[in-house]
Image 1: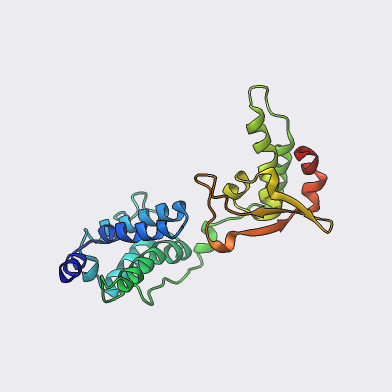
Image 2: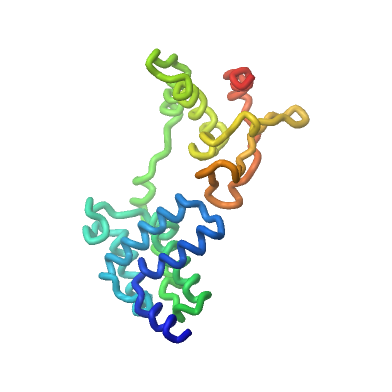
Length: 231
């Protein structure tokens, strides 16, 4: 109806988000992803002083992206600029998804996020540092250490095996924590874990549908006695 379209044209980003979020939750998008994007959309809405989403231009989006990259305290109270990857894959991706959905729903006509990307700079690579071999070795060795008597068996098992499984499978911590004994299988001599969704488990999810996969267990994990632990 015309009245609904008129109303949507006056909605701010965060107001428009409510409808988008509902549709994505029904479609099975991971709650953690939606919660993160909601935070990004709220930050953008605050930056634009809750102007109607329909009034924002490509220049507005560019200005916002550059503010995220800089030390603008209006979007970063700590005054810390974000990397190009964080801006592009987090903040701009959330805005782009919202506008595309609104256009598909005939709530808006134009997408000001189209083609907006920020370029990476040399300083970006200095902000994200991976673990050194020495640090990884220290972490895995620490996981072998006996836990105090006050540590529950459950938490002791988490401390013992989660670091090793994450290090040698590339799985996310949340994916490893959801593993059950039945998710460990062996076929033609290859032991592997299944990362999947159990609809009977409330809160269990994966980031994307592509995250559902089988991962062979590295010999290092087997040599640590993981299968004996499961027995």
